[in-house]
Length: 143
Picture 1 (cartoon, rainbow, N blue to C red):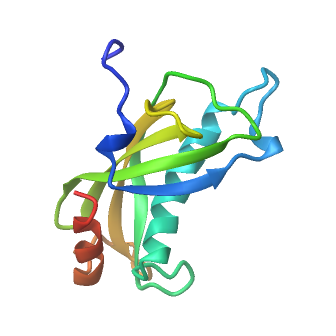
Picture 2: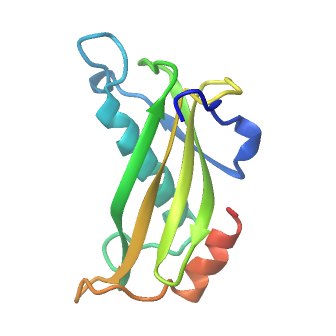
Picture 3: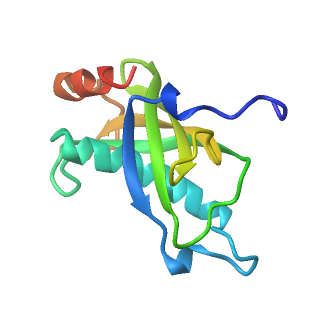
């Protein structure tokens, strides 16, 4: 997998713009690895909120991240803007595997890419549940 080419901007259907912050940089002068996961989470949830299928405070069904992975190819630095490409690689009854690519400014090749898996649960019981129809319809746009 180490030699696998990074994904291209054209492989993603949806993008979320994320400005880097001064605090994202580490002592080495580039965005710290942990921030990449934050960008993944921000991109997916920002998309779901914007599409009207997630209310962070009130939705009775929420997605919990149960697995995540990231490959790094090129450093991102403040004050660059990151464009997070999102696509759905797999959708089951109660889970979704999102593929994400982080692109620096106008770069065509991802600086980093990875995935995370949401398992949808009932907010009150924390038990897995089927992805709501409206959310499934929105997520179909990303397949």
